[in-house]
Amino acid sequence: MTKHLFRRFARFMGLPILALALLSGCSKGPADTSASNAEQDSQTAMPNEAHIERFMQVASQLDMLATQHANGVISGEELYRGARPIVEEAATDEAIATNVLALMAPKLLNSLLQDDNAPQQAVGYFTDMLTDMESPHADMVLASLRMLDGYWTKEQIRTAAHEAMQNAEEWLRRTDEEVRYHGKDRPAIIASIPHLQSIASL
Image 1 (cartoon, rainbow, N blue to C red):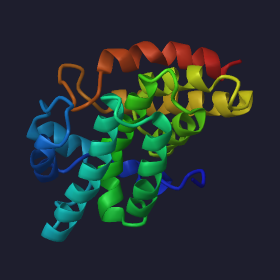
Image 2 (spheres, rainbow, N blue to C red):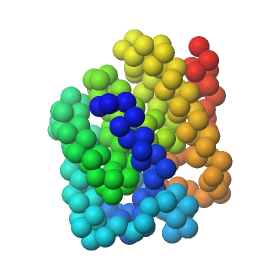
Image 3 (cartoon, one colour):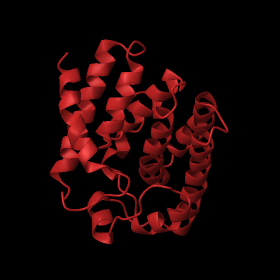
Image 4 (cartoon, rainbow, N blue to C red):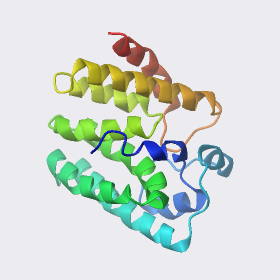
């Protein structure tokens, strides 16, 4: 993946309300986001029927890979080899990428983070994706950087830590601390920031 391939989608990380409802049977994450929260996290228009169909197709493919990996059916290497072409094809369609990658990239990375044998190339790929898209999942990036120690250069690790810290702080500034956000663990995100700051300062 070319660095910053997903940067142009960074401001569109929210999942439209309709698409989130349609995907409830596919995603295993918490589905407690209210309509107002989804509006706050999203700047995209509601997708048309063709976009929803394509969204569901891509999300289902990636969700199946993540689920198979989590259940031990496929290896981390197989997850990476299966997901990467799907992800990069989806990235060519902004109407899909703005939503499906924001939803599925954290799930794919989280599955790899649970695997002691996950290939570092795969972890690095999805970590890059999260930072490129300005994802607030700083807790996942922190865990990734620990796995990437010795694989990435010190400069790569410092840069990713700095970007993840900035992305998380920006997300925290614009969200309500009293509200739960779909797929995002606010306390874990907050707790990861000082650790990322320490890494970025090395």
